[in-house]
Amino acid sequence: MTRLVIVSNRVADLTKATQSGGLAVGLADALRKRGGVWFGWNGEQHDTLPESAHAKRVGNVQMLSAPLTPEDYAQYYVGFANSVLWPLFHYRLDHVEYEPEFFDGYCRVNNYFADLLVPHLEPDDLVWVHDYHLIPMADCLRRRGCGQRLGFFLHIPFPPHDLLSASPNHERLVEMLLHYDVIGFQTAADVSNFRHYVEDWNVATIADDGTLQFDGRSIVLKAYPIGIDVETFRTMSAAAPEDVRIDTDRRELLRRKQIIGVDRLDYSKGLPERFRAFERLLAHHPELERVVSFLQIAPSTREDVDAYADLRAELEGLAGSINGRHSDFNWTPLRYINRPVSREKLAALFRASHVGLVTPLRDGMNLVAKEFVAAQDAEDPGVLVLSQFAGAAEDLAEALIINPYDEDGMADAIHAALHMPRDERRERHAALLKRIREHDAAAWLASFMADLDSAGRCPPGRHPETVSTAGFNDLTNPAFTETSP
Ligand code: ADQ
Image (tube, rainbow, N blue to C red; front, top):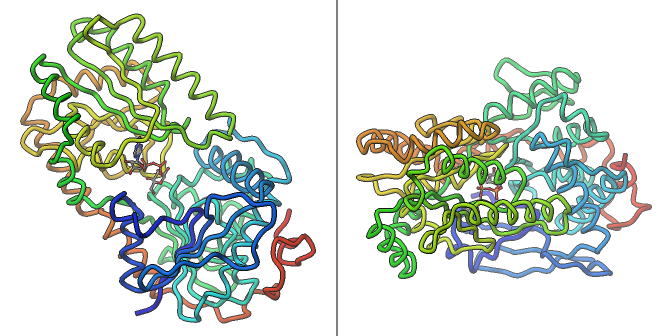
């Protein structure tokens, strides 16, 4: 079987991946099955960079990782990836902070990664690149003469063409994407946005079968909705850790209900809107006081990006004001936990909750929505309240679909969820469970790999500007200067 090479911003620890669960497990399983390589940043910053990647063998998988310089970290990771692409692709031009050197750093790091990866590639490898940090990777590899089949999966949304065109580097970015053989998005809406861009800017043609035709090559362009390992999560949810059991027993004794939200602390997740909707629920339905509590788990991420620190302060203010106004000596309406929680505990907390709030302003897919459904007791399930702007909404129509900008509408949906009769809850849950089983992690992996396996090969040296692999992170390297704006 052909080897698989995964390239992602961070490398998962294969020795721990099975315990932590999630996406890493699916990718790790595919790697173990085929053998191969996982390459990415090791999370460290060093003033001088190594000339080869740090290699560690785990079974038949080679784990390759490398540090960044502080300048790379500022320009590539904090800068172009998380202060330009993340907000832009989440339709948040108001959060874009653009500096010209960010794009230089972004291209420089992709070239540096390509230089470290190339010596480890074999001619028949399938190379699967993940996410917005690494859009230029195919271009960088082709310039180094790589003819392997290259696939790319974007985990976040792809924005409408007029929004994308607000970025000074949009034409170059899209052109870089066209060096892959398979380009995968989360949803049909993302595929359609990309197609419109390609047509409007006249960068490639679209054949009747939906493939892109560019530079004499045929590129597969498709939605591959990502999923979870449903049965593992279901099993985990049924075995509640002791502290969750005690908390649940106490709530049942007091006939109280729990609403839950679990997100990374990120402005795309719609957390202030969600907190305010909960306050409106209490304001419109005072009979819910001392009956309903809201548990929000949201650990901080990307603390070096200013917008995230502002959001954290806003949420702390909102939580304080809601609790100050509504708490009683034996009831706290909103519990806000700003720390990560183990997957075992999360699964049990989902199962013990009556309503799951997944209300992002924009989200590629949102795996929490699927985890909440997987964790429910099919006989007495909780209700999922889901944003129309989460990729998951394309598939999960039996959730209560809401507009996260409409806080009163969200409060009404939470109220409806809390009062939904058991038969309706069971019916909706059965339909949702069926859907997440059909589109689980294994199906996502198999469908992408099948397309990558059968993709047309790019003959070595095909790239018009193929350059040698000599030198990395070097401003005089033509590979770097040519990919700069
Ligand atoms: P994220 O933006 O991180 O992922 P999401 O899809 O919800 O969003 O995945 C988060 C994962 O982290 C889930 O498995 C969840 O259980 C876990 N998690 C969240 N909060 C946690 C906490 N407090 N403690 C422990 N674990 C927590 C990006 C895109 C999404 C896309 C995924 C996968 O933004 O749209 O669905 O990639 O492609």
